[in-house]
Image 1 (cartoon, rainbow, N blue to C red):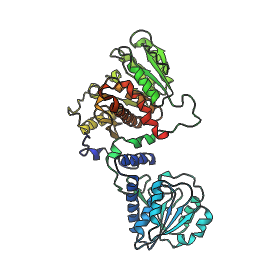
Image 2: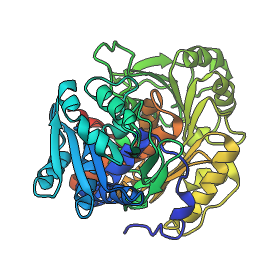
Image 3: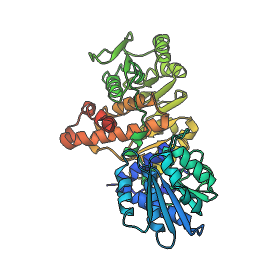
Image 4: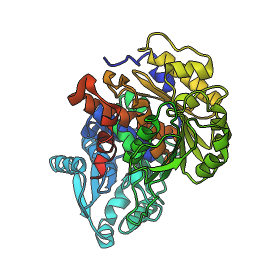
Length: 474
């Protein structure tokens, strides 16, 4: 049953400007919720036409690139065809997205003049259109804009600037374009924008979704061993399997090198074992662990470590570049936050480190979120509060994750989540890493539950993690 977030959703909406990268993620999340790309483009184009009509022009020239921003401009042309003389100059070079091609095909049946261009000579031949236009719509690049324009777009921009017409930009001005108005869709990407609503569901922004995966940086073709990140897992002793589950999950989530510092050896050839003497992690291991921690991109700490090693955890923590604290590392006094830190408590651990008991109704995601946000602001890190609905907060931003299955209550799935967090933290800020890790681990659990049911093992999630995390790259 989907939780009802309607009560608190507005209070967790982010405000102000949004980055183009985050906006692309929100767009894709909206599409996963059932609002198609064509629907979003239609809403954006109609709103853009409304901004143009507010200027009361007799003639309009719409400049369209070959991407989705150009599709927005083409939709606007359809709404301007009645009562306004409308011309569309569109870049006819390269393959255009299906949604943009769809809008161009629709324009062929409209009372709009169409003028393709592929070169500066083509544009110069269209100079009378620039002179005649009272309003020019800039739909050349949008959020895909580049700092240095290439031809023929540089010439197109210069001709628009020299025309004397008012220039209305669709979402984000083309670099160098001297705009009069900016019509921003959903949220502003640059200052001075007039924001219009295009019907994006509120949950596309406050909940995790497949669009969040677009934030994962692509690995370069020149990458070498270690470029995917080096992770150190400190754990084991009382519960020997936990650090190895976390380590394997980190590998499956893209880390290149994972070391396990533990008193217990498990024969896992993909993991590098760093032997700790004795049967518990103690102060005698502090120097060895610090030396390992300073060489790691991320340290995951607490998995299977038990209750007797907390002083050692706290001694090592200040030497970590980035860290994920899980399980028995979540005790008072808490290890201090690094530059980027993720804490991954369940409800009981949250009460242990904050003194706050969460609402007894686990479905009260809103109440849990408020407490997680306050705690994250106090701790100075990101909290990933596990539950039927996960809550991720850095004290300023808060998101909900609804992926997962009740069968994931089996022991070890929290270690898997910590490992995925650690791998993603190698390349992402803590908040984004926590959001994506919660989404991916939950989706992997759903896949496993589909054929294992309540017979799921935590280790069953391993093969599904890369299927969810990296399938868009194949």
